[in-house]
Image (cartoon, rainbow, N blue to C red; front, side, top):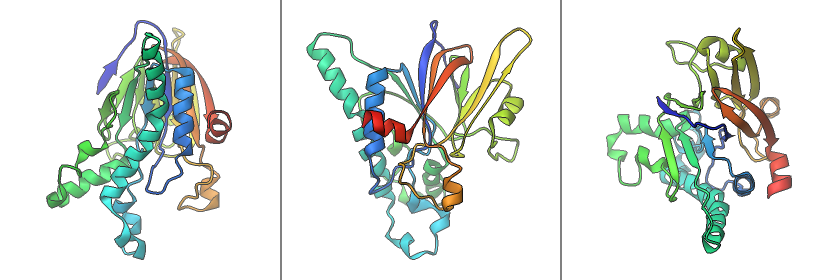
Length: 266
């Protein structure tokens, strides 16, 4: 478990599961990059499942499509998405340098989700797949940014808020599905992704300390169609959660749907 603390309150932008894939529509990443430059959050947390890794999906084994999927292509889709995402930041910093002003250098946290973890399981069972381009480090960014990578099922605490891809309900390691239960089981401010739904719960201790738990939804294109059909798609919330003035586990928050993000920042 990693811990980062600031003496002053600061914003944290939370980016939930974005599931990049080969042929993905990258417009949401461009809009996200523009949003980041517009608001300059000191910390950006990617909650995991930043890549779909469909080539290693057990749901597709035995299907005709499975034989046409490629691990290396899946990995490259993440880096293609990051090229689009970080382009506005690099352009901003180039302008700042030309003006002899300070660059924007946020802390970027990348949690490893269960979709990325598919590769680790493959390499455990089939070590022959390991190479310079197929390994767990291949999810690390190729950009010159301050990135912290958090392993799957580990977590990071920032200014009193703990972030994990998902929080375990018990020794079996199953994900907790709602914010109120996360708060009850963990007893501290927590944020997770994984379920693609959005939920928030808050509780105040007798001394006035407020704890918050958020299940942060997903970050998918508005035209995305999931494997579960229209009823499941209707349950998802796609967008960002922006935590403002985070201090000792408390914060104000705003959400921005992916659709509104595209309308305002594309």
